[in-house]
Amino acid sequence: MAKTIAVTNQKGGVGKTTTAINLAASLVAAKRRVLLLDLDPQGNATMGSGVAKDEVDQSSYELLITDVSAKDCKLVCQESGYDLIGANSDLTAAEVELIQVIGREQRLKLKLSLVQSDYDFIIIDCPPSLNLLTVNAMTAADSVLIPVQCEYYALEGLASLMETIKQIQQMVNPQLVIEGILRTMFDARNSLAIDVSRELKSHFGDQVFRTVIPRNVRLAEAPSHGLPVLHYDRSSKGALAYLALAGELIRRCAKVTA
Image (tube, rainbow, N blue to C red):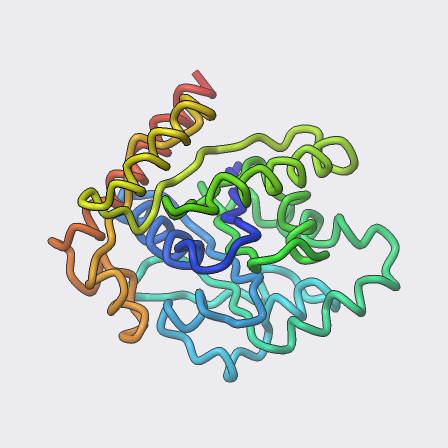
C-alpha cells in the first residue's frame, strides 16, 4: 500500500513544488513506484515534469469533480520514472464546485484509494494556501512534509500551519502525522539561516529532517528544462541533497513499520 505524503506550506516560495518533483524522482531512483499529484492550479509540478499543463486532458480537476479514475488521469513521465496527475488553471474552479458536493473533503481520498496498491509513494504538491484543495490533500494523506526556508518569518508561518494540521486531525483525518520539516534554500554563509535552523531543531527536534536542501543554481534551472534536477545535473548539490532526503524518508518509513 502506498504511503501518501502531502507536501505543503501555506507560505509560498519555500521550495514546495521543487521538493515534490525532486523527492518523487529520487524515490524512483531508489527503486520505488511513485505517483506525483499536482494539486496546485499554477501547474508548476506538471511543467517541471516536462508536461505542457494546457495540454493535459484529464487533470486533477477532472479527478476531483468528475467520475474519472486516477488511472484515467495518470501520465507516465518516462525520463523521470514516476506517474503524474497534472494540473492547470481549470483546478481553480474545483473549489467552488466542490462546495456543492457531499463529502467534499473526502473526494481525493476516495479516488486515490483505488490506486494505493499500484505505488509505494503518492506525493501531493499542494497549493500555497489553506483551501478546499489543501484540505482534500491532507484528508487523503498519511503524513505532511513541510518545506521551510530558514528566514525571519519561517517560524510564524509554521505555527499557523501546525494549527491547521491539528484542525484536520480533529475534524477529518485523525491518523494524519507530520512526516518532517525540511529546511530548503539553505545558505550556510547566512547567519540568520543558521539561527532559524537552530530554532527549528530546538522547537521540533526529530521532526526536522537531517537532510538540508542547499540554495543551488541547478535546482533553479531544472524546471525550465522540464526535468527533476537528478536528470538535469545528477552531480549537483541539489540532486545529491534530494537523493539523501529520499533515503532518509525511506529509512523513517521502515522504522515505523518495523
